[in-house]
Amino acid sequence: MDKKFYAILVVLIIIGAFYWYMYRPSEISQSCEKNAEVLVLSDGSSVQITNSNLVNFKYQECLRQNGIINTNVSSQYTPSQDTIPSSSMFPTATYSPTIQPAP
Image 1 (cartoon, rainbow, N blue to C red):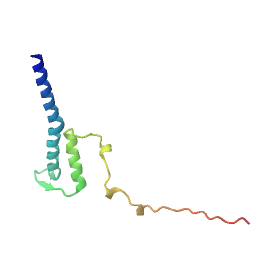
Image 2 (cartoon, rainbow, N blue to C red; image 1 turned 180 degrees about the vertical axis):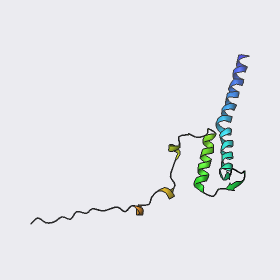
Image 3 (cartoon, rainbow, N blue to C red; image 1 turned 45 degrees about the horizontal axis):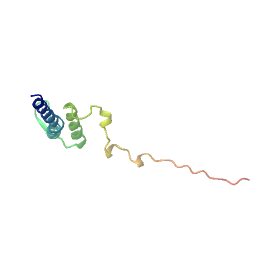
Image 4 (cartoon, rainbow, N blue to C red; image 1 turned 45 degrees about the vertical axis):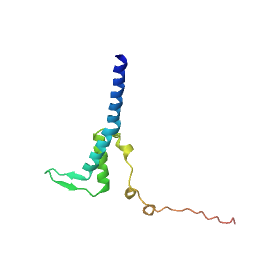
């Protein structure tokens, strides 16, 4: 009886772990992916989102709300190429000292 009980318990723990760590996050991710591209307005109508930064933000926020990723926003932020200033915006001054011969 004890061996059967422990065997059933181990099987249930493995099934529960599979559901919690594999199946559930996959389902939440798919749901968030579908919902991230649509913005529901206060009057109940919906609008398709075309801004990829906003879609990514909504997707990440949905995952956070469902407990899938870390809620520390600062560690999740990676700026896109559009937000990184180019070097032409900030010209650098070059200093080249001139050596004058001694009199």
